[in-house]
Image (cartoon, rainbow, N blue to C red; front, side, top):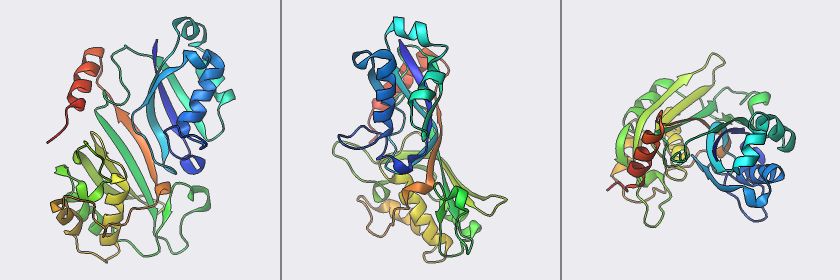
Length: 268
């Protein structure tokens, strides 16, 4: 049985999502908890929508896993509660839902939405939000940030903002990129796209922050899109300000398969 898991976690003490020998990861502790309930050989195919880096958080992460039919039937109604007892306090499974076998948490996704929180108050970030909010040492102009974001929306080659991987494209389509200042004064960047390459969101934020505090002109981030390799001028924003907040999918199994086929086609 293929099961969708909706997962939330504080990434502070994790070395990212992906399992790594000798390191504490979200996938590692989740697999261990599932293995207690379904045996090690009964948990297969754990696949995530977005492989977050070390220190990055999630309130809307999605993954799928294949579980034994009998085990799922017996634990379906109590799985979320049982996992809450087994998992550490900094990761939780909010929902566990049986899905069609065509569902693929990674390739069936239509979009992924992230938020990045920045506090530019003289005193820094509020103590209770220090784990998910970057304290910026200079005042930021929200209008300048918004103007810088405009030139990055659309389908572009984001090579200047990505860690290039062999046989992988850096072309991405950003459908939304904007900033808002919350009532408490914190600035929040929202960025949504069909997919992101490694460190792309934090690199975009780093470039826009340089505009927001007056060190770079408004058109500088968009101007870097002309480059075909990683720009050494872009500072990658720290991981702890970033949170994956939503992953969207088609509404039916036929849509899962169509979307997966489309996603696997490399952009050129």
